[in-house]
Image 1 (cartoon, rainbow, N blue to C red):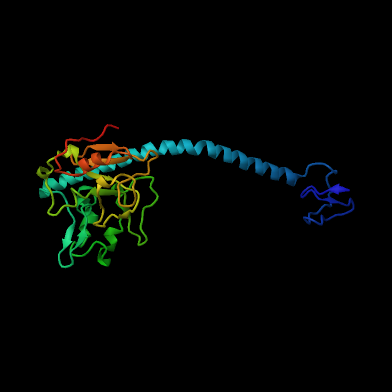
Image 2 (cartoon, rainbow, N blue to C red):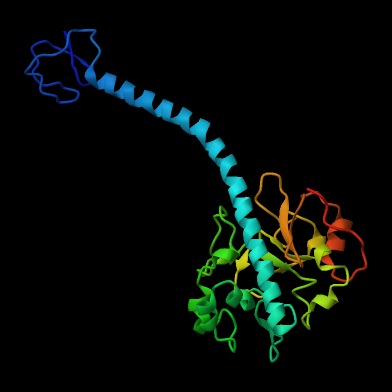
Length: 275
């Protein structure tokens, strides 16, 4: 008896074609008991897969740990750019940006963030918007389907809604950017440095053109789709204050602290907690 050198099946020594794998054995087979070349190749592949799995298991956690600080730093930079854009808007119009109201229906046409485009090097997108129509009107589809880099946190994979509109990974403090009429710097009685302006969000994301990109910090952090929150491992959230300084607040921050930082004129003396 011989062993087929390709599949390892035992065959009669006079057989010229392996009945199992149909290999041509005219040149002779391997001696019985000798390892087949097919088996050796298969073993080599399996060993390679195991080694690759070990390498991936060792490297991926390190890369993940290395990426998060970079994403956090980028988000911090974007928050500062957004807050500075608010200041530049205030310099021009003497107030904070606010959602425009469609008075015949009582609904907001455009959000505070849309009015910042000109101050974020997005003038072409801004000029393409028909402010006489709602943000999601078909006539405004092109500009509002434009991805604005500063509106999204790098590393967050949820970037578009079901309609194809790019999402926004930040929300404004409803007590400051959601007030009608629009507030001014002088209305921030608690101090610009002690009042939240904009913060990170990762649940309940809305398109960046949606006027509903507003949340209440007093509701807590990472408490559901209506609250501020982050994807960072420790759950902390980064915020831009009204003076465009950037602060980190732990996920378990006390409710009275968040409420004090949310209100612009509540009379509280609390400041951002130390990281």
